[in-house]
Image (cartoon, rainbow, N blue to C red; front, side, top):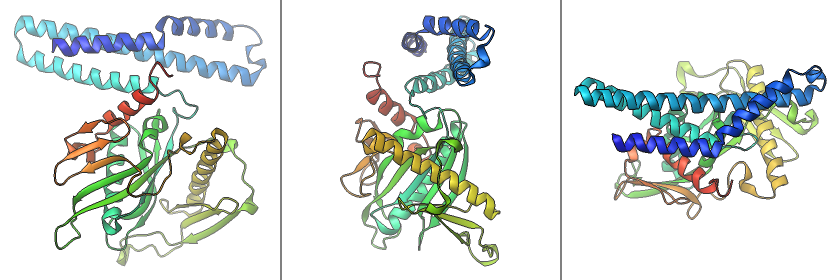
Length: 364
């Protein structure tokens, strides 16, 4: 426990150094003095920008202060428990340290997220690739993985569209994920994910390899992109369901195609066709905005990750269930042996490793 406390103290010190605690306090005071001056709100655009900067600065300061207080409290609790040889107090101290470690990791992750959309919400789309029914089943497994992960992070998750497979699983699905730093946190997950296992759909119980892709795009403000109605093709269809008495008889689902680019989105999560249309337009704007950003940056992986064929040679991560159990991220080399925990949404360590490697303090 002493080692864990010291490591937490060292990590907090490094975090304060990277965030430049002194400079943050000076910036906060400077903006507050500026806002107190007469005429500050005359230039509304500038004033709003400074107000937002102050809000972010105060959030950062508050997070650091809370971490420092939590660490002091955990250290005090642990030392008292040792002196009194109180097993219950020791257990409570260990729980406090575990919570502190998780919070430290979350705040540290956010420090690496300085992109223009990292603080905002996102759409996460899943598509089955090579592997037939196994790939579609794998896509459904990944849907559960990311739903569990997002919920553990405290995000709001809504399934806005899904296309069932012929036999099992999903051909595709889209999640809307809302919460602080949702896009920045999930952005590293864009890419092809590979699964190796004994296929439950193979009567001879042979080992199969299947693929699915993840694409994460930020949700943009409505006014950021103007789309001409003449460029859109709107279609309505019946929302998918289990059939029978539960079958959707009204055409409430909506599909929108942007004719100049061929980008197509669909939404069937709402009972109202109008609401599905509104949600589909938000998805379309997000995808078109991502394409524009990619074009400006002249590299495909800028926002949505490298969109390649969903098959051999393009995977960013492999999930091996047979002949051994291991999840390996091919970008960072990180390996985790507890595959079931990963499939249950425990992927923060992979995200952290990618962010730390690609946006380290030396390169930030």
